[in-house]
Length: 103
Image 1 (cartoon, rainbow, N blue to C red):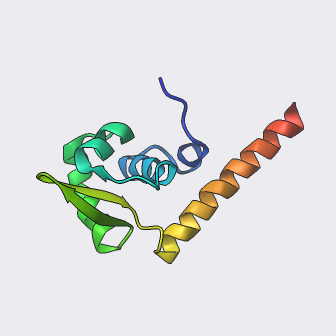
Image 2: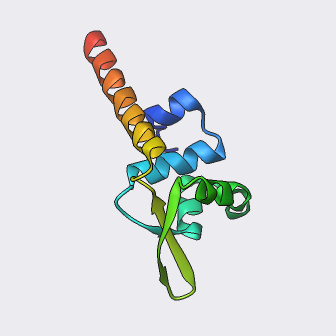
């Protein structure tokens, strides 16, 4: 079993959080929905239930089309996404500092 990220430990590992966590970790790359679902460990049908909300709120953006597949990535130009990434880094830094104290 894969270790949970600090982000998922704090906010829980519900499907939306799993997808956001995956997209934040690999924010430089774009993926088709099937790969996002697979790598987030979320079923494709579950991903489809909330994906349109992520698009509508500009959390994710369509980057290109390869064959029949649309590719998406995290919208790092969105101020809310920027804050989410910053929060994730702060959680990681806090976790590292906590481990140093106990070491």
